[in-house]
Image (cartoon, rainbow, N blue to C red; front, side, top):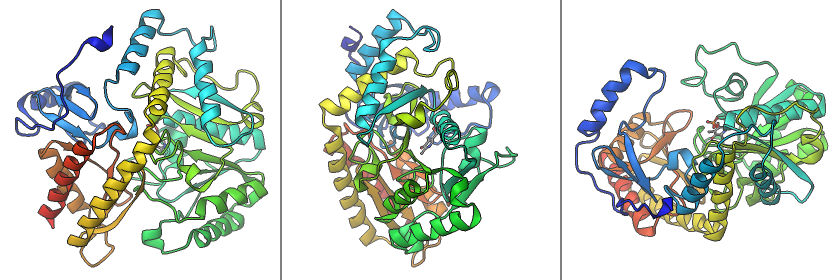
Length: 445
Ligand SMILES: *Cc1c(COP(=O)(O)O)cnc(C)c1O
């Protein structure tokens, strides 16, 4: 059994060289000759193996993972159930193309998605390789099903890097700059951002809806696409009532409500999906990241009458729903369910919010602490103002790296540090990571 190959990764953070160490530095030099310079590195250490919440680099530094590869490895690294499922599937067959000769695991994933996503109506799914591909397909489906052209998106939104999803994404640098021209019929409206707009959810929704109605016209809108908690845009949690008001408006106007749950889905926020916190039921849900424990898999799931409106052959792709990725998703979903990681995410959230709020009281550069479940962030500002403090953000993350803690940044202004620990992280490991982050914040204060 593959899972019986026990590595000795352990559970402790341990830094034994300068970061990056000599072996990572050598690899980094080597990469420059053949890897495009357009790909940057957040943390230039090269990983050799990983287990649970610990990554081991090629210099034997043991790093504590508070990023989960951007909310992907929610169940942790090298989970035996996933390792076994994937290994067995690789030995059985790796590919047939679901559109040529299908297989059961694809159907099983769609059954799970239908059961787990909100809404009691009949649902079908289509599987893809990446989040961006799922979003592209959700837009295709919404346009076809409604016969309308316009797509409404939000300020600070992130939906991917393909041509259509660049157009849907808000931030120019680095995602869009000089990569245009972009797809037409995309309309951007203000996002509820309580720390910065000071509006109630209802008022923020009225503002957005008024702009849609005056600038686009409800009858022209195929879909409203929104991350229920924004990811790359800064972990912006909309004010209570914002999402329900938008959802109500879409229902009244025959607009497809698409929830981009790619970062926030699969137990991350302490519920299976972030929309569940306010009882919002989307028409279509896009998922990826946390769905398959690191294997590339994405999905669009939603109302059968929308999903099935597409003509035969209208959806697909060579690899979408690949059998290895599909069994990884089944193992991931079972692991989330069997270990009640949805409840664990809430506990992790309580620990992180309490620690960061107490830190906020001691320092002047944390403007906001926010998040839900194990999706938590701090927004860094110049003391006494709300002016974004990207320099402090960079310095804090750099300090964490030097001490063997992986923490990611985000935000339109590059001034947010987000925590996305694997949901299997222990209290001890999380508190260790938080104490490093606390020391980091105090060090730049
Ligand atoms: C990561 C992400 C995407 C894009 O997913 P890829 O797999 O990188 O294409 C889209 N939406 C959100 C909210 C994301 O976090």
